[in-house]
Image (cartoon, rainbow, N blue to C red):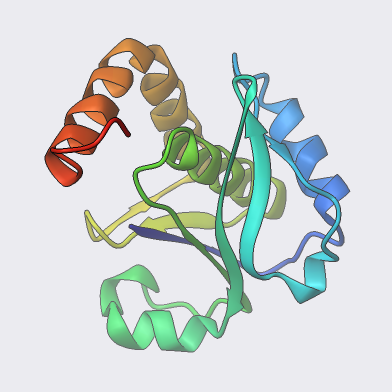
Length: 157
């Protein structure tokens, strides 16, 4: 799955991004690795979530390519920056990616675009979605187990 943060400003570092996540006071905040310079993000960004390893794919994209593919996302404006966040079904990936996106969008006065729903989330809406996801952790754990059983029916994954 893939979400994008579109903004007219970039954060200068992963440490600044982490401060934005911390400012949201999520119950189980993601802890991004600071080993990769922000300007060189291009691939998997490890994170700690709820006592375990997690993370998501993260890359800088040309905002025009996103608006060209999804015309409604621009809403008649040209964004300067786009940050792509991709995640799968591994534990914590969804939470980490959405937390990071919501905090980044708020810190840069941007928006989060969810390609799955073809919907633009204002920063506060994205933060509320993260709170809802975290509030449904028990449900998420059951979904994760069901997905694993479906994908790997004959293993002890």
